[in-house]
Length: 341
Image (cartoon, rainbow, N blue to C red; front, side, top):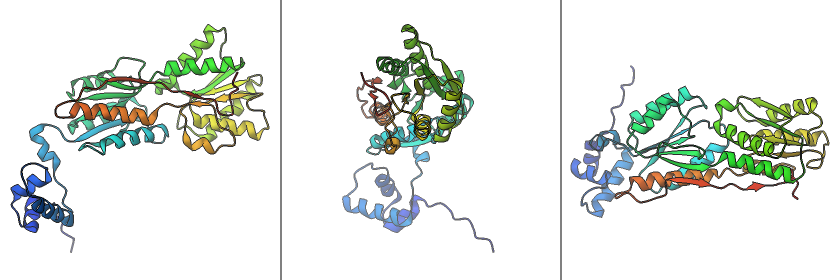
């Protein structure tokens, strides 16, 4: 005989288990109304023992929103975004707000679908990576009627609030450090730019600064897919076989930069004497490498925290005044692969 499906628990079940009225149970679970501490403890104990979870969708019908914050990011395999999520969670865990994550794989059409589904649940706020969106996505964000915080980038105009860094500035500052160290024959390796706007902006800032100083990138290579040590090794080998005269390699992220570093060390190449290297993101996992890769911290944890603080402040009763357009300033870490002069 097939097992009959279990019915969901209701307020009545908690009422019967605790010996108080359904109205009192509702007040306790919504943390509303005047209820004695003894009654509150009795209701909460009964609900916990039963495994009862309140139906917040039903309770949200009157307010037209639920205590969820839609967090929309391009990737979970990229080590950047879990740290952003950590920052968001650190702030929201002290509130009634709960982050819910959607992943777009850097695809505008997928971002539209994820955003549509997220907004259909009437979240209290949205945190979304990047400033570039399709017309449909931007229209949905503008019409949502809730706080929207675009994160990771400040080179552009936000729908509402934004928190991030200037990637063009980051590219310019790394180019300045490389030229100051005496390197002149530079190769670049990175993600395919149409899919990663922030990498594109760093590349633009990097090449613009070089051009102002009479330097052009001598070789470049782009890839799609996840950042990986193996990919960095392969690309570095291929580039140096094509252009053995290069004296510096700039990578759009630390993971492929670490792969390049391991390749050069295996080949016995003097780093940073013969060839210098730099990446981007300041990935802590790579601190165990034989040499510390020069990089720039993208302020990931702080971006997550600031974005969540804006959402929480906007939703407070009454709303709290807070800066809504925040540009953080990353710093270069020279490590062992970029000479200092």
